[in-house]
Image (cartoon, rainbow, N blue to C red):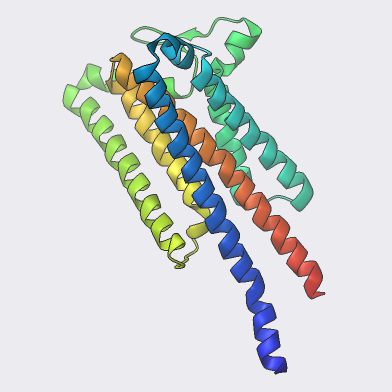
Length: 243
């Protein structure tokens, strides 16, 4: 009996961790789905608010900024409470880089003029470095430029599909060391797809898709920080109970 009880007590933290991870994963994907559907319906059936959704500093872009800020602040707070953790540090740095990108390195907040970008426009975000690389490759060879874009598309789409496969396995109860990082993988994949659209497309419809992809990616990153921070908290509680 003592052996059975000890085994059950030992397995309880793993079971709770799996349940919490699956619950947060399902919640994150549900929120992303609802946001996507709501944005699409609003754009189609309420064209009057389309500009409010998609304009510079509009609803979608401000939502992206808020979720990225939440991810950065959450990662910082979790680090203070539970100590440095590589997943949290990585998520916080990614969120900070994207937050700076979304706010044009603070130029719109502080009023300074960004540097000009080769080929037109301004260097007001990290994504512009990809645009710069694409334009410079175009000057050498159109084929090389489109090869770069094709590789970005393949890697981003492949990462999204891989993460979705891991999600399905996680929901079915099969876990690997990647199970706790599915949200981060999805985030990176969606950001990659958004950058491909930003470089290659000029239509307003695809620009709207890009904005929604970036918002969804920010939501997933914020949920990832919550997930990692929550699990760190739960593990700390279980460790104290085991003493």
